[in-house]
Image 1 (cartoon, rainbow, N blue to C red):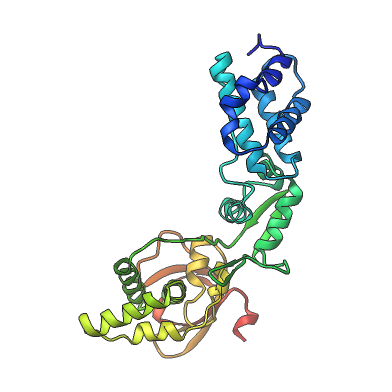
Image 2 (image 1 turned 60 degrees about the horizontal axis):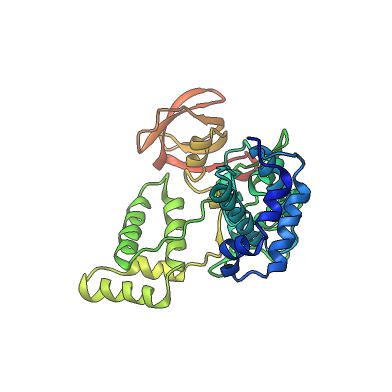
Length: 333
């Protein structure tokens, strides 16, 4: 895209008429807008209008801007509007998907995007228009290694199980930050569903922890209202809710930290993520055997049992007969 020389765009948008139309009602100081337009002009290296070069220049200008990056993005979006309306030039720029100046928004974006294992810090820096140094600080916070860890509703959010491989960053255990705007009927329905899932030995630890997490995010009014409705209107046992109220849970946990060595506690993670494990299994004759280097066979899960490969062959494993399970042999001693 050529034909519009470099000088006029940056000069013209700051004329009184254009400035009034695009920026005067934004509450920004004129000196701020002027500074950002000059910063963009300094970054732009070509004599004519070029879409890729303009996006690159905007990205570098936002990265180098020391104040609120949202202000810079707003000014540059208005600049694109000016190019379209005054010069009939439609320029597509891939601005960041989230409000990168909002630290919490940016960190939650990282928590979700790094679960695939196909991104590195440079990729994310390009996508989010922030420096790699800022992203490294975000990762430190997400891992709980910062003096001021992330807290949500008074509870820690941390993902310790992170690795780097071939320049890529991967959270090998996935954490999904859900913040749901449910009414109490939806909450009760979810809690009852989780209570039913706790009867499944494979899902028990997950369902129990999920119910605790959900309960702890309720207001005091919400908790009391659920107890009142259950006792007085539905006339059902409230022991389940009272047990949740007594539970202690202070973190959004990654998958490994759900696990104990009781029963088939690690099998869901190992089945889903193709990990190896060890177990103590109760045979039909009442004897307990130690099964080493186990792996779940894909497609064999049938609700109450599945097939595994282990050191000595292949066999069917019933979840209610798994006495103990762990990722390592040492954990079962």
